[in-house]
Length: 554
Image 1 (cartoon, rainbow, N blue to C red):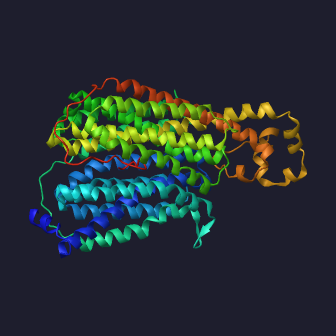
Image 2: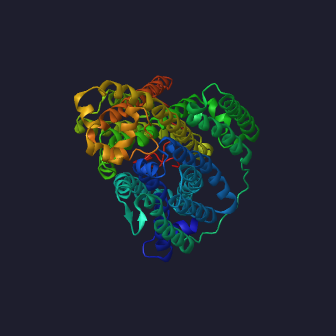
């Protein structure tokens, strides 16, 4: 191992060129998982409309987050048993199969199932890329190539949203529905990565005995699955219905059995419980759950807000979302070294939580007529807050972890952020669509007798346009608006859609308000951190925070 690493430092040697090719293969794998989540988030409004499942889109998002979150630590441990190369190629294969099936999905339920499969592969890609880099590079080279990996995250964040908007805005590309390319674009990138790693990664695997916590992972799914189902479907079943209560009880039983299993598995557990004796570890990961709620919530809701409320096309919304990435990059790059050297985690975490919370409260105060420049400024500010929170939590965990706990502390960073992201996405989307019907009804009642609205209802040209029928039938009481397909808002008469958009904006404002309150909880939690933490050891190089997108699997 050491000899191969030394040889890899000499430019022009076959070993050096092979390592470069492997690094390129790893970067392509990271590009897959990083780019995918941003592209899909930007395309989701169109995808959900096409699959008649706008109100069910949380299934597709949370399915990916949950499986990738659980797969990340499991792939890392499995690679110790069976070798990095085999597991990395398996992860790419699973991700590509999931991507292909997502591109062929015919319903939101099918898409959710295929996204779950894709998430398993995405979790493996993120877990193994840095492990392989550690296998083949010295610490000095590792720090150098870290810049390359950071560049991949930045490119994914900047390019992902516009590319997703481009696909969503195209009726067809090469004879295939445009939105399906949000998934199919992964295939050529993944195949190249698969070939490069297969041909160039030749380092022999060193098998190390390792217990795998399969049972704990299974109980975690039993815990999370029912609770996420209730968060999505509880509004239909009734929050006190027998089905809802039985699922909540099932999740509680799963949680108890998960904790019992983790205690029995000790250091082989998905997340060893002994780490929670450290106050900093517990507080930081509590904050990480809350950050996941806010980050994933914004990533899902900002494209919906821009398209449903501000009336932007998918492409225009994608370009606007570059501002969020710019905010993340600005603060994460400029503050990472300052945070790392000062060790003042509490002050910076308070700052980040405060900025994110304030941004969400400001979004809650916007209305349909708010200027676009103000929306853009808030998107940038929200990204800047996220860019502060990410490096604080990551550096606090890594710099204060014992050397033997470095891997599991880093895994905990992704694990708890992913759990928060899944919960936040499901709850906030459920909240929005639960409130939307009543808010739309209130908005319609306000304008129903207005001269402009009545003129539109009596206009023969308006009545002849099929896209206006959902609104007309709602007003007449002969039908209702189906928010599973919001595409009628694009072509319907603006006089009729105004109260619909106003009702959706009102529902979203409540969600942004709830998100801001959740982040305030994180703000209060941050006070439990010491003013200045003592580092276990001086890091060899400044750590980089995840940059542009809070990928579920990262």
